[in-house]
Amino acid sequence: MSCYRSNYRTRGRAVDINMAPLIDMIFILLIFFIVTTSFVKEAGIDVQRPGAETAEFEQRSTLQIGIDAQGLIYVEGQVIDSRSVRGHVATFLAESPDGAVLVVADKDSRTQSVVEAIDQCRLAGARNISLASRRPE
Image (cartoon, rainbow, N blue to C red; front, side):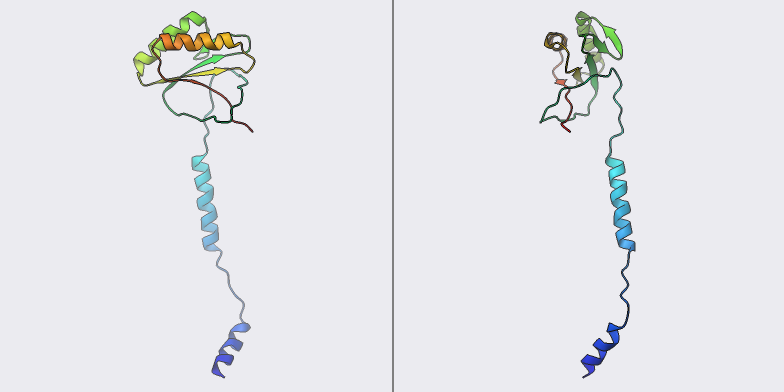
């Protein structure tokens, strides 16, 4: 009988749900997403990169070489001749021997321009040469 009375007394009370832990978890998740979001804006020319299913991003000391749809080659925002790519890459590798070269080519650029730029990078001694692509949406 006493067991019945204790249940009868607790039925009438309202149940409080503590919202503080839920709010704490939401703020922690919000802070996590803010901290892990990348806010890096790439400097250079505006090119439309071709897509690739296995695209990965590498964060290192890189020299970015851009090739637009007309075949013009850009290094550090300046238009250069395809033969002077080798000199720029050699200078970059002298400053950072473990540096990587990133070739960012427009999807409408000629393959010959891209191959020439990569060949010049190899002749300069670059071992880490990557071709940029955009992730599928």
